[in-house]
Image (cartoon, rainbow, N blue to C red; front, side, top):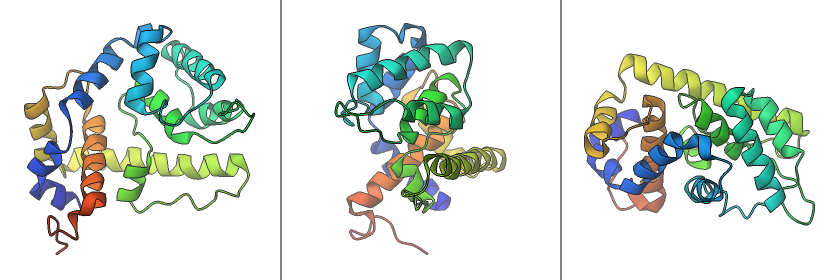
Length: 207
């Protein structure tokens, strides 16, 4: 799969909008403003908290934790557990938002991977324990997150995506992207292209 990204690097880069880079850079550069409404609005749009229609109460807790994490980075599993304690919807319903927890964690630790459905799909990972106790679910997802950290390290060390990473930097001139964040962006764009018919229309052919 990495070889496919290497082979189709220009198409993968074309699937990444310039705003993905400029908005991310702005959010990292202005992280100390995370208590401000303007910052929170842009953060919600970029990381899709707004699209998830999370309650105002949940978002308030989320940004307080983002502010606190800058001085004292949390343990990701503990952070996910703490966020779960806050209702995600106005009717009191709670939901495990592990992806958003990983995005908060990444914001203060930019070499940390981001867990989302696109990256999970790339590695054929499925959350098969949705009916398990919350602690079991968090531990299961955290093990996958640890795998991502190790795998991204291997990709960087062995140069498995060296050309796409270099091309990303040349094409977008990012200011705050770690190699890990570039890998995340490449995987996300690649899976998006697949989901839009990359196999059926012949753009990608497994060999």
